[in-house]
Structures are given as C-alpha cells and as structure tokens.
Image (tube, rainbow, N blue to C red; front, side):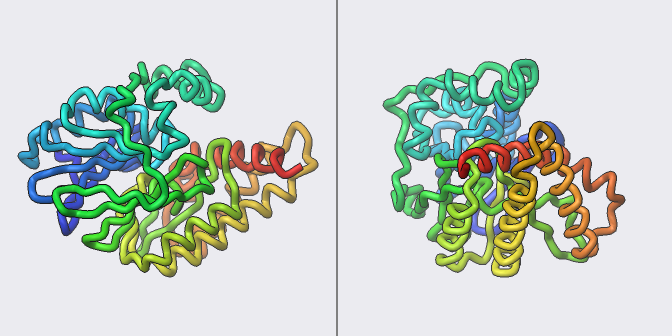
Length: 314
C-alpha cells in the first residue's frame, strides 16, 4: 500500500510510519523534476521515503533540499541517514539547530532526558552527523530556490527556539512543523478537522507561540501542512481555536504551579479533561478512551513542557 498522499501543486505527504500510521508526515515538494523534503522522521522512515521517490519517478540526485522545521528527533532523527542518500542535497535548518545536526551528541542526550535511553534507542537508532559544509542556516526570511519555486523560511519560536515555518510562495501554503499544533485525521468529523496545541518538550513559550501564529497568519495561507498530520484547511478558524487552546494550556499549568511533586500529573489530567471537553464540543463521535489513546504521548509531553515553562517563569 502506498504511503503517499497526493495534493495539488506538486505537494505530497509521505507517512513516516513513526510509532503508528498517520502520526508523522514527511512532506515532499516537487517542482520541474526537482525535489525538497520537509522533515525526515527517523532512520526507519528513510526506506519509506526512497520507495516514495521511486513511485513518483524522482531520482535521488534530484533532491536539492532536506528542510527541518526543527531538530526534535521525530522531525530530524533520520536527517543524517537521509542526507547520505541524496548526494546533491543541502540540509536547511534553523541556526540554533545547525551545530546539533553536525554533532548530534547533545541532541541525543536531551532526547534521552525526555524519553529515556531505551525508548530513544528503539525509536531513533543511531543519529548520524551531517557534514557542516552541506548545512544551510535558515535565518529569518531566508528564501531558497527550488527550480524557480521560492520557499521562504520564517523564524517561528514557541514550540522550540530552533523552529522554522516554510512559506511556499507558489501556493501561499505553509509547512508548519509543530508551531500550528497537531491535527490527527482520526478525529476528523463531518468534514471538519480538530486542532490541538503541542507544547513539548522543553522550550514552550505561549507568548512566542502567539507571535509565531500571528506571523504565519499574516501571509493569509489557505492551507497549513502540519507534521502531525499533514494538510489542515479552514485556516482562520483553526488559528482562532489554536490561540484559545494555547491560553487554556497555560492556564491549566498556572493553576497547578504550587502542586509540588504531583504537578506534572495534575497538569496532564487537566489537559486530558480539556481534550475530552473540546472533542465533545467539536462533535467527535469516537469513544473517550480512543481519543485519549490517540493523544496519549502528546498529553504526557505537553504536561512536561508546561512544567518546564512554569519553572522558567518563577
């Protein structure tokens, strides 16, 4: 079965098959036979990408760019192995992330701190370094050229300080990584899509997230391409919902600021209740247990990210 979702204007989503189907998308942009990939999944995703390129008759030497929205390993863990497959590609990454792609040792240490050593090894394997001479630092408003198609990189902190969004000048659509939340296709209801913030793992900043959302919306996009999971429509409404839910996350955390050793668990419980209230209001007909299972990892990591944010504002 094909792992490719085909959109208009040479845009494709490749299921990274990270943890479960339709959790993480690797986006492919094709213009005049040349290609750019946005995010990489992990090492296990690389063979899937190669098969997708074969299916689309795109030679490996025609991949010009591998663009990382940020360097969390579900987005960047496969970058080193992927760059070995594409001899002409350059890696495009936020300046704060560039050195960690050249030497991923501290990135791996940080991931172990979040997931633990066993899970990090199981999920990501060996994270390979990338030749610094192949790395392009995506400073704010850097524009890269894909066979005449302009891809504009924007500094979009809030989820992480090393996060960028990519505006496709051809369509006006934006590849958002995690700054525009997550929207899992299982929760689609009556043709509508449900969005929920992702604060993880350690650099959440609600004020910066609001600024980044506003920046992206200033380009008036008709579609956002989220890593988790792919094309999101009805963008103005989604932005309004996302802003409200970012504030709701922060307020839940602030309400548990003095909860001591139980703080993160109480924050998680509050987020779970918020999720169930919001999906019920949205009209989602899935059982509550299934909704919680779909967002299980997100709820845990969001609570952790909110805890770190609370400590940063003391």
